[in-house]
Length: 208
Image (cartoon, rainbow, N blue to C red; front, side):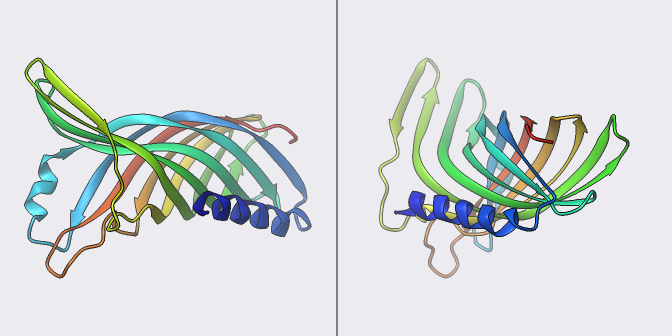
């Protein structure tokens, strides 16, 4: 049901901007993520220094609705991997979460015909579909898939901010994603866990 909601949201946003758009372009996006979990508002905040970024993948589709030469609206449908790592190469705990995510971004573009710069920003909605945790100590490593509990918040609301360069239809993008909802239901005094994601990607937009 949550995946259906995200697809419906993407369709509604697309339909809302199609009628006012001067031009529409679309295409694939592929890239990498570097993510960690941020702890806040709790007694375990000192643990945050031990949490490191864990690499992952992002892939999906982009639609861009140009409202003017300067401003466009860019909804996307992405598969994104988020997670964290604690430890080093010899001993660690890692988590990797697979999300379906829908960013709806305002995009401001400037520059020459040959090379354009742009900034993006806007809300995101995602749903955690699966994940895996891994524990390694020495030569031993054990991995298992997530088994979701009632206290897990699989629906995530967030925000995304980015900058990039466009060489014609080719867009190079660097973004930082902030999860605004906690990954788990918490009691008073407990740390709230939120995703923090640095993304580097390339998109190719047809139809410009």
